[in-house]
Length: 151
Length: 151
Image 1: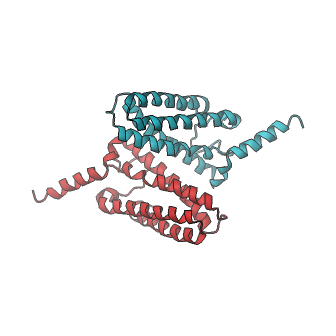
Image 2 (image 1 turned 180 degrees about the vertical axis):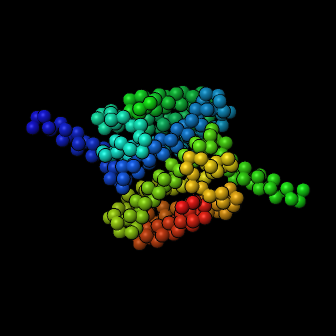
Image 3 (image 1 turned 90 degrees about the vertical axis):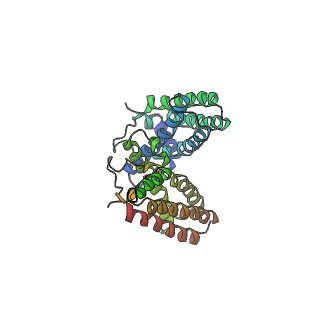
């Protein structure tokens, strides 16, 4: 019992953490969904990055609009990392997503917190604040990719 | 002049209609983006459909949550149908998307109007209202797919 209990607990935690997994009819759908969400996220975040890094002219309205879309999208991918979606559809998700659920969840939460700050920064209309918040948010993306996404 | 003017006008209209096309660095990115958005839209809309069609138990909160995501996502695909994104990345978009811009725009607008009504219906907590709004929204999806998406 001592040996199995942590596994049972982990399974229960995983089920609690990812209740929406069952919302996808096929594992492939879940993978395509999370890939779509993260790709879109990257596109909108990249537009903010272009402004933050001086590759595009700063446009406060565009920054705010993109930050809002980033905030909406940032909530969506996680439910699609349910059990049984470890393989297929060219997923780059590492096994650590499922082996280290707590760490993965924490990384996802951290990103959403940074995204909330990015939204606040975008609304100030200050390029300096946008740059700072963009940097912190980008670090939260990178940290999760380093640990949980194959190259 | 008489022959070229409509074309120039059409080009101007197209540019006005799709100003965000330039936001994508590559045509492939735009296509992947719109495919992701429409796939995600289909997933969330499908969950409402499952309730509307009795394949899943009615859950007013889930209906509202999904309708909200549908509303957010429904705004996103259109900017990714810019000029130069007619081919590649296994797009199923028909040439009519670009040849009949006004009709395509009208179809996209119609869908967003139906989605807004779907949101209102979901918030009432009435399954009957949800069913009716789901049906109208689904028709707006189908109409656009029939005309603008290859089988």
